[in-house]
Length: 276
Image (cartoon, rainbow, N blue to C red; front, side, top):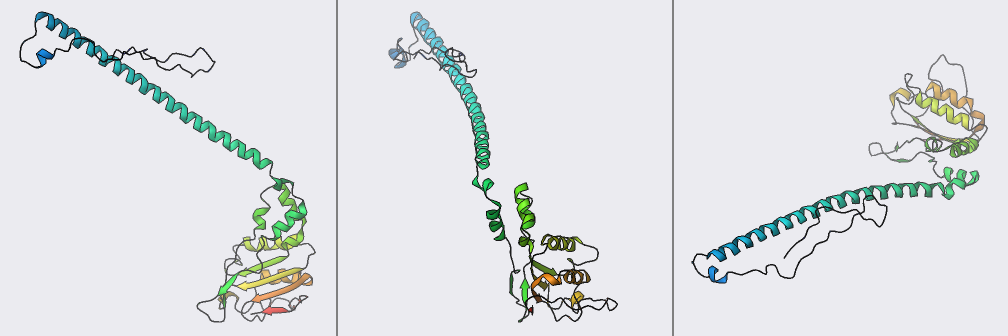
């Protein structure tokens, strides 16, 4: 086979693409070797004649040139494969970028962006967990284990300006309040929980309130005989708007734990207090 190698890819003149090359051109005849076969020498141990020796040397030179041409062509093909592989990687990267842009544009056309505030209000209502989930205690037969979680509304209002307006405009979203009593939430050194509770009550404006109060354990020593002072103060501030009040605590004697606190009466909700 006689192989003619072009040496390197040639730029295509048919278009303006900088990385567009014409295919390699390989010319070969149908037979690998058309010279003498030297069969008689191969079947004997006779030395070649001077003319045969000349022919052998010519044949070896042609073969070596043939191998060199094949090696050059293989190297060129391998280089082309490397270039094609790099181009494919670039195309894959560009494809991913385009898909991301398409997804972004589709999100801009989402019908959720055009939902009326009243529909968003109904959707946000479904995110409210009230009363606080609880399960039967495995340690105490007549007690519950409560599973507090932060209201999803605090996260909803951070999504966008429209959602925040809905969360703030519809005050009834905040009117169902779970309160979990433990040492961390009502510690005098950590006011984060109490401040967020005060913010939630403020957002209810004049809405009737449904409140659930529960303790971390039935025998919580810090609050065994009284509610935390911060909570008692908050409850008295909104006593006129209480629609229901559920207590999952030990029997509470004082709403103020400090004996020097002013005399006060427990708030009177519109429906009876449920105590467990």
